[in-house]
Image (cartoon, rainbow, N blue to C red; front, side):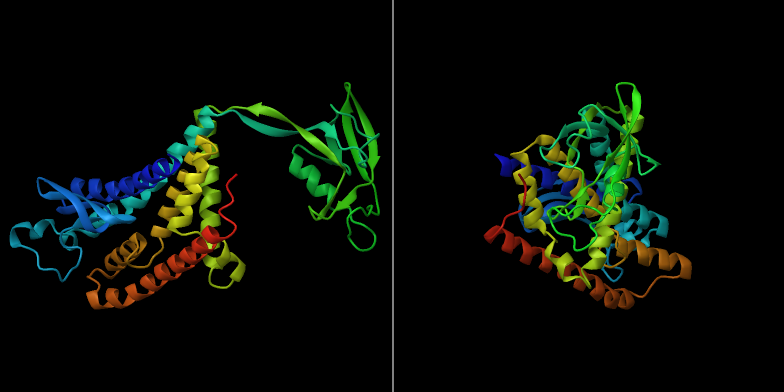
Length: 359
């Protein structure tokens, strides 16, 4: 059942992306010849008005065929006025941008919806438990709330961990070694503030010094405004992370090992179905946004390539020769094939080896 849900989720992302192009083309008066889920050969099709709707055999994407996408295409005179390349630049940009924008909208709605409907457990600066034999034992107590570290006020667990990790062993950093200087803590205990000094130890597994206690958690909910803000923050982090990851592909061998292709993305989604519907929906939102980002790279045949050349035409105030775009599209094809090949190679290796890490 999990593979069916994953398949439907992927198909929905493709359909909605292409629907963005389709709806925008119809809205600005262009002629849409075909709307297809998956690539040819076409397995089933039906015609409604001037548009053919079909399902292809190769589940690697989908497409919308608009009359006159190729400026050298022979177009019947009676529909020539509705051809893509006969339209003003702004209409072409609207149609091309509508696909990625649909994916962005999906990610925003899904992430905002998750934050608005889920109760999150947020770590606090309150001490929850102390590990037996840890440096904090006998110095801290469950219920203590950490107020400052080394004289610096703290309000998050990240700030506490970061400051503690600045205390290093005097010699080689090996598991169990004690830091040269103790950490000066101020905690709130039973309504009063208490100063405590604890000497952290180095943890080789975490590669940092620590005190050996766990933080408590508190429930946190969001209204629509707060949920939207958190969703936008997540989207920004995904966007910057995706761009950075793609950039690193060209010079970082380790980064290339982390790339997943269509198979990997599908398998990750399928496995997440067996864990949690929240995780599944979250992964689909990430994939949707990543699809938009990759599509907006300024290389043909990607959507961003069409937007780039339409913008160049607007700046030059005359059409770009098709031969120029044809030569430039080689860069885009090479980029797409490069990323696809890396992803597919990694996916095959994971299917045969360590798997995709969903648990």
